[in-house]
Amino acid sequence: MQYREEGGDSNKIAILNGMFICIFMVLGLIALGCGTFVAICPVQILGSKLTGTEIFIAQKLLFILALNLCLMLVGVFFRTNIMANERYKMLKGVDALKTVSNPFLGMIALILGYRSVALGVLSLLITSFCVFVNARYCVKHLKLKFRFKDMEFGLLKKYFGFSFFIFLHTMMDQLNWQIDKWLLARYAGSLAITVYTLGSQINTIFIKCSTAISEMFAAKVHVLIENNRDEELNSLFARVGKVQIIVILYIYYGFIMFGMAFLHFWAGEGYNNSYWVAVLLMTPIVILLSQNLNIEIFRSYEKHRVQAVVNFGIGILNFIISIPLCRKYGELGCALGTMISMGLVYYPFTNFYIKRHTKINLKQFYMGILRVFVATIVPVGLTWGVRHMIDIYRWEYFMSGLVVYSLLYFAAIYFGALKSVEREYLKRKITGVKYDKKD
Image 1 (cartoon, rainbow, N blue to C red):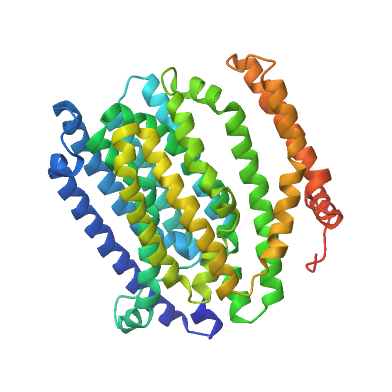
Image 2 (image 1 turned 135 degrees about the horizontal axis):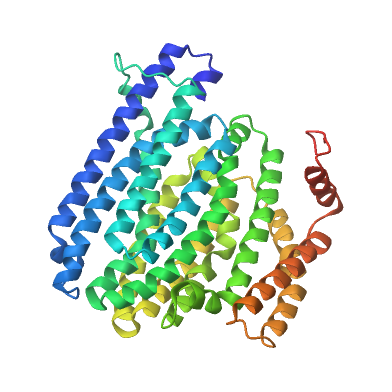
């Protein structure tokens, strides 16, 4: 984007593309090597709580996942090129295909009698297909070209400090959410891992629903800050945050009221603790997820370094807290440790840092958030009452309850949380009536 704005020639951009595809291929090979090492030494990494059969299966899965990660890292190059060109329909279309096909095809495989290794291979095939589609789109429609001569590796020195802290933040974010599974493997065993993983998957979907919204505005954030359009940035942060909290609270409240029954239909009996794992993981990040546009804002202001270091500290705190809790309370203890570290440290820090180092008006943001919270009190209260009057463990009542909740929730949002200008904008979007860009 920077090269295009500066009027860079196509040859220069092709050299840049060649350099970055090489870098991501090298990263993919490193990931494959690390994954292979873990697969060769599973006992040293996962501990001795797993049986011999489980260790054998884990070796196969770890190698498949290493291949998957290798492909995903190469795919990052094509995905970010699509994002940089703001082709969000294509980007979200492929993401939606991957999100839907993984559980749907996995369920079919399970019904046909296949087990975990087959599911891993299936996931690898889906990743391969998505990377191929994105790559083909980049080459055919975005006219992406590569040149592997005269590569400017000196640029890496310029951006290394900036990129390293993005890497550190991302790595620690992943560790914060995955460290519990490693602790459970060492101290609790495979059943606790399964129970925790089900709850963790719900939390992952919860996070993705929010990041899918904020991700579409990443490029715009950098443009606004680069051109000192602070008022527009502040308005964007408040509007995106409001949309995110509407989606987040819909999922959060819905899971609290119907989650136990949903897990009963999805996983069967014996997974009640998965519900509480999900609730513990989701609760401290409800407001945080509505603010996750701040990640790009911090990066654009080059204030993301401290955030990355704090995230690293939270990962260590989470690890220290979770060890005794895991030993005593199993999967619930691990989830509680993550909840404490995220809620007591990360949320206060993020709000302090936004206020101290950016020009974002948090008061405007929280006024919009408060309108949504107040508007949802009545639909949630009514649904909670109806929920206790029907047997939601019967499929027809479960679906009826969800429909009633959805209608009440979005009616309350429309009439109670949205301003008149926002309602008019929504009407125009639904009916297809053209509107001015200033709206």
